[in-house]
Length: 449
Image 1 (tube, rainbow, N blue to C red):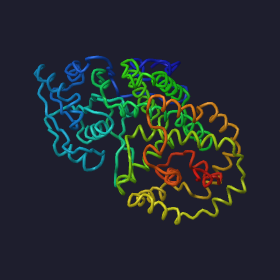
Image 2 (spheres, rainbow, N blue to C red):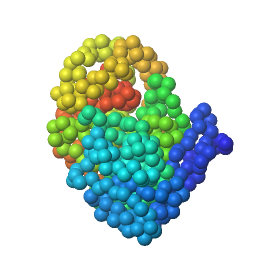
Image 3 (tube, helix red, strand yellow):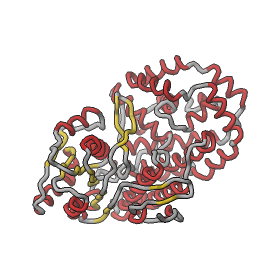
Image 4 (cartoon, rainbow, N blue to C red):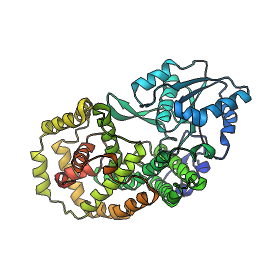
């Protein structure tokens, strides 16, 4: 097996090689993705891919919009090639990746089918990968929009008991994105793809910070791969409003590269940080209280803008050990969990259970983290300076192409953003800037009117 020299500079077809990479970080990096096909008219290659990966009768999974966008064409192609198939099209207008939707797919699954093809974008892909895991079938994905970065991963972002969770699922053997389809996706979905890629600024920074504070596993090769995919998307951004095929292909390739980075790392850290938790909180509130929400990538892009503002303010802070210890000593977990119940509703009960398991507010653990923060503060500031652009730069980019850039675009007030930020540290056991600010006793100073 070859060493990893320079894999961060490789093209997708080289990154998905069967033998993977032995890396200087000590891990073997590998993805289950076998083929990535992006181009004009590539839906015609689906029959070949089905046969290549051992399929004979596919099960098609789509919603009503994605079936019109690509499903009808895929059905025609299968019939022309005499390939039998079964199909389930979700009847609901608004589809959520939750227990109900997964149950619908499972109950309508044709057990004679030996490969599953998801046709759509984020939600269909998450559900398709989960169905493939439950049914123990291989999975292929035909994208209808370059809207998120989970296409190439072996996990799914799902809603369980009202909480956004990441669950293990089946990685697609093949990803097909026909430019004749994805270039005609709703403009908001094109913006969403860019928004999900902007998150990589923050995720790379927070990965380095958590490595310094918590000793979390970190691989510079993977981080470099993510930075490259992000740079490619930033350079392509101006072409999105014109639906320039080259720009949209660059965004799609960047999203796939990001997913491969997640596969290589074995967790989502390379691709998501606190900006994703802004989005998760807003989604959770929408489920319980029917408040405003938008596409994942739109919310993540806005979360990135907010996170960049936080980091700019953080860079001017000098941590004080006594202040931090006093802040944590006065912190009342019961009062905080009461806030979560008021702000998030029933889903807060699941977060309380997570805290019992994770102990992120444990004072002994905090004291150990604080020592590392104080010891590595200059390194933390260096990571912020090296990884993050100025907030104004990203706002300008989003505004130039007509994409939403502020929480006001979602109808969110400064007070709601402040409460959201406080809740971000509770969503999962992933170290982020909201947890860092809690650790140094400075959390309450952010997002004040």
